[in-house]
Structures are given as C-alpha cells and as structure tokens.
Amino acid sequence: MTTTALVVDDEVDLCRLMQITLTKMGIKSDVAYTLSQAKSYWQENDYDFCLTDLKLPDGSGLELVKHISGSSTTPIAVITAHGSMDLAIEALKLGAFDFVNKPLELPRLRQLVESALKVIHQDNAAKSTPERSPEQQMLDSRLIGDSAVMHPLKNTILKLARSQAPVFLSGASGTGKEVVARLIHDLSPRRDGSFVPVNCGAIPSELMESEFFGHKKGSFTGAVADKQGLFQQANGGTLFLDEVADLPLAMQVKLLRAIQEKTVRAIGDTKEVPVDIRILSATHKDLNQLVQAGNFRQDLYYRINVIELKLPTLNARRDDIPVLAKHFLALIADEWQLESPPTLTDDACTRLQHHDFAGNVRELRNVLERAVTLAETSTIDASHLGLPDIDSHQEVITSACQNISTNKASISNASLSNKSESSVTDSIQDNAIRSKVETDSTQQAKANIHPYRTTTQHYPSMNTSPASTRSAENAEKTADKSVASSLDASINNQADKQDSLSKSVNKEDIAAGQLPAQGLEHYLQEQERRLIITALKQTNWNKTQAAELLGTTFRSLRYRMTKLEIAEDQSES
Image (cartoon, rainbow, N blue to C red; front, side):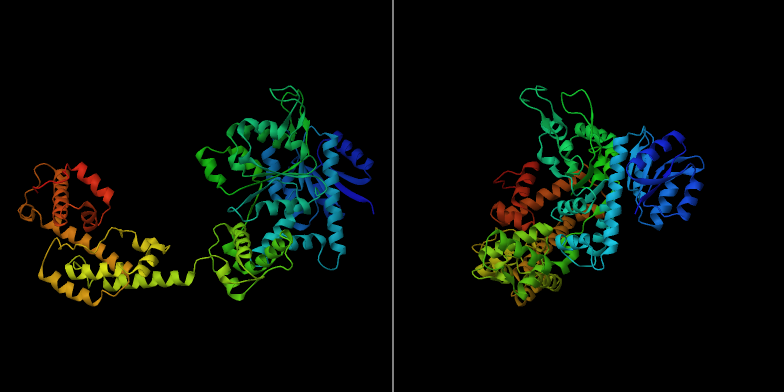
C-alpha cells in the first residue's frame, strides 16, 4: 500500500521541492497552500503523515497541529523559519512529531520522513497484533510495577517514544531515570541507533567540550589523534544527559547551540557537522529553582524541557515492592550464579513495604543484596534485611509523648529536688534503658537531654517553696516513668523556674515604674549573669552540672561566661 502525505506551505517552490523528494522515496503527496485548504484535504482523505509550515496566510500551523494530534495518532512534522525555535517547541508540546528548519536541507528532510515511516510501521504492527504489542511487552518486562501511578507513566512513555521532542526526566535519585530513558529509546523509531548515556557531573569541565563535540589531531596538547564526540557517537540515535544540572554555564551555551542547530563543530575543525540525535535529559535537582538562582540558563532549560516526565518515588508505589523485590532477587541469583533465586518470607515482604526508602529503587536492591549475603539459606526473613524495627520506634514515640503530657504538671519544679533527682538518676543507671534511649532514632523527643548527669552529687532547687515540696512528693509516685519523658519534663520545668526567678529579680523596682537606668540590654545581661552565678554556686562551680541545671549546653555556658566576664572561680555574685 502506497504511503500518502499532506504537505502544507504557502511557498510554491518549496512545496514542489518537497513533493519531488517524497515522490523519489515512493510517497504520494498532496499539497495545500492555506490552513483552510489543509483542513479540507485532511477531512476528505486519509494520510499517513503531515508536513506543515507554521506560518500560513490564513492562520497558524499550530492550529493544524492541534487539530490533527487531537483527533488521531498520525505523525505531523512542522517547518519553522530560522530563529523560530519557540514556535517549534510549542508545536512539539502540542503533539508534533518533529521539526525541520528553513532553509530546507534535503538530507534532514529525508531523515525526518524516514523516522515518520518507522512510526507508521510501528503503529500498523501494533494494530495487527490481537494481544499485547511487542512494545507493551517490552515496557512491562523492563519497567516493573502495576500500581496506580505506573499505568499513566507507562502510557506516557509509549506516547513519548513516538515523538522526537526532547524529554526532561525529573525525580529523586534512584527512581530509575536512566531505565526510563533507555526504554524511550528502545521503543522509538531510533531503536536501531545508539543510546549514549553521559553523566554530566562526572566529566571535568576542561575536557567537557572535547567529550561532547570531539577534537581534531593536534588541536591541543595531547590530541594525538582525531576523537569522535558524544554527539557524533549518538548520531541517528539518542543522547541521554544525566545530571544535566551539573553542566557549567560556559558549556550550557555551546550545548544550547548544538541542540538548536543540530550541528556540532569539533575542536580544531573549521566546519560544522550535522547530527541527527534526540536529546533526553535528567536530574534530581529542581531546574526551575536553579534558573531563578542564575545557575542554569533559562533558554537551555526551555530547549531540553519541552516535555517533562516526573518519575514517582518508591514510597508512592509501595504495592510494587513485592514484585520489584522478586525481580531483583532473580537478577541477583543470575549475577551471583546462585542455584536458585532467594525468596522473601511474608514478614520480610511486609517489612519492606513499611520501610521509608529514601534511596528509592536503588536502596531496595541494596537491601536485598545485603539480605542475600547475610541469609544462610535461600529464604530471607525480616531479620536478614537489617532494617530498624518500625513498631518499636512507634511505641517509644507514643509512650514518650503520653508521658510528657501526663507528667509535665505533676513534677513541675521538683525533678531537680533531692528525691526526684535521685529517682531520675537511678533510672539512668539502668544500662538497658540508657542504651535504648541513646540508640533511638527519634531524637527530637529528647533534644535537650544531656549525657552529663551523675549519681554522686545532688543539688537543691534554685527556688524552694512549699509548692515545690508537694510537687516532689508527687514526683516520687511517677519516677518509674520512661527516662526520656522524665528528663524532658525536667528540662521544661527548669525553663519555668528560670522565668520565675528572672521575674522576681528587681520586681519591686519594675512595679514602682522605675525603668532600668542603663537600658534593657544591660538589665537582661545582669539578670542572666546572676542566674549563671547562682547555678554555679549550687554546683560548686561545676560547669557541666550548672549547664544542665540551667537547661543549656556546656559550650553555650562557657560562651556566656566569657561574654558576661564571669571568672572560673568567682566568689561574689
């Protein structure tokens, strides 16, 4: 069956040139000179692909692109004048297959038509297959997962594979950006060409131009032979720029021209060489923020980010973890030449589904490799995974929060008295409990706890009152609470005591309406100085204990003593 095409352009000579070129390739074509004529031809006939100019006498070619791509899967390419890259990018976003610049170069036109024919043959093969197409089978076998977020992702990948538009892959580290990039290449008409991945952050800046564009022999010291650049290696295929955000600004300018003009010039060469490549890029950084900060060129951002594909994290697709784990275990067994692939128990599988994977799919494989190494048999249990027990952590957090809220009022101003202090320090002496507190990953609940408490000496409260005595008796009844909650309440009480003491100093002067004569700053420093000296006296000038008594750190106390000119063994207040 003869392939037919619709050519739309208002230049008669250019239309005749394109029609002759298509005829030599065995393609029958119809020519339309206006937008209305093109729409009329499209409704009356069936075409395999369309080639249209963006500027027409009675409208814009973008309208035709939107009309065709919205009603069919027919590939449509656009012709743009030199310098009209923004319109070409807009056409690609609307669904255009590819674009070609004016003045029209016949080799570039033939490449575009050949790519369109490959897409047509690929679509016809998919329609003739009653079951899943080979493309869908490849997609399901290499992009593991069947969760809710994976269905639209797979459909988008199939659509992007048909296009020649640049694609920007965004997502956290370890989400599989290179896997998706290679899939887009293998599902595209460029599958017979090379897929050239390059990590932009791994190339030294002084060698970057040579790596990307190549060099001629003798162009610089050490250039003993001609070298083909990455752009030339990817000619006819796909160039994947991983971690594109790490490109230096000087290289971004040269990369922008290569992408826009689709020509490169090797170092030491005098002419530019055309290249036919598709650009895929990826990074885990926020390119938009880098553009706002001036660390990434805005024009390059819009060239590579024609279509953005955001990859989900592993935490967003927990239902896929069992299938992914089975897939990775089979790969590990094959790579390590194991007799049989290891299997996960139900407990291990459940534990993996409840783990917070900061490293995403890459971390999952790392965990499974460690488990296979530690397991003595082919059965992997939860203990072999080496993951923290999430249930115990939740119990500790819940218990600490409950105890803090329960005891905060009952042991106010009493946790530093003799009896309550003895109860708390006796609890700290329990090595098992202390180990649990020190190894607990939720340190927010005990951020102000200091490991300097001892059981050799106890110090009286800074403010003694009947209320504090009654509170101490109540504290004895609650001394068997968890160490973290008791200590947190102790620190909170110290803050209350410091507030009450600072309010009591010179209270009569303030009540009489006499403001500090030397200003607010001097007044506050004087109160702070008195509090520190009081705490130091109660601890026999032991700065470690005084810091804990004041609810601060040892280093902070030393800084304040130097600032307030408090001597190490000052005797007067």
